[in-house]
Length: 223
Image (tube, rainbow, N blue to C red; front, side, top):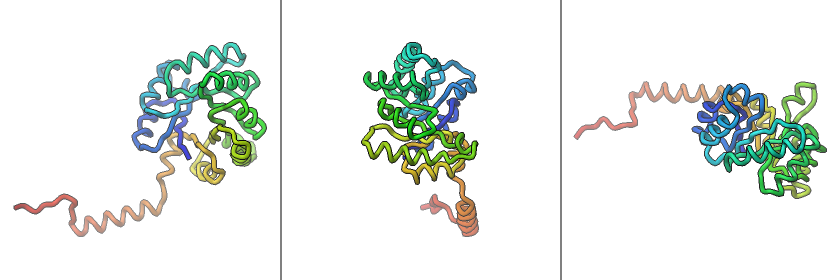
């Protein structure tokens, strides 16, 4: 499963990229606004900080003609960019157009398998199924993820199912169990994936034993 970072913070992208496990970055208008810098400037900085990664940047218009103009502009900035499009009627039409032109897309704000079907048929590169927001209203966001994975694989669509609105490590584990292709998450969740109390206990014991024995990796023997 691919791991994407969900952020508009370039410093977070640099830190995550240094780990060597990040395959891309997703942004949205809210995250870009929080970054406090220009849209194009921020997106290009993210591309530079995550070389070769898929970088999702979202259109903000809601009518087809303006969405198309925005999408073509955004796609022209860098070959790493994936145009992010909301699951609305003009958005699905836009995805079909961009797909025909060979431009990658990420369809966002998908909450049901029926919505995902429309995105897949339009040729979406990524289908962003939101889980946390569904959980917030007492639903099970992973049900739609699992159904979407099954739908994509059963009918041979090329779209990848991307689990979005990830709130905690358990969502990542559940995404793997559902055989999702991608999960995108805040840096705080990536940091939590490292954590396990037995790892901390084991490392502490190893280092205590090593230090008590007075050992060193580097030789202190002189000729």
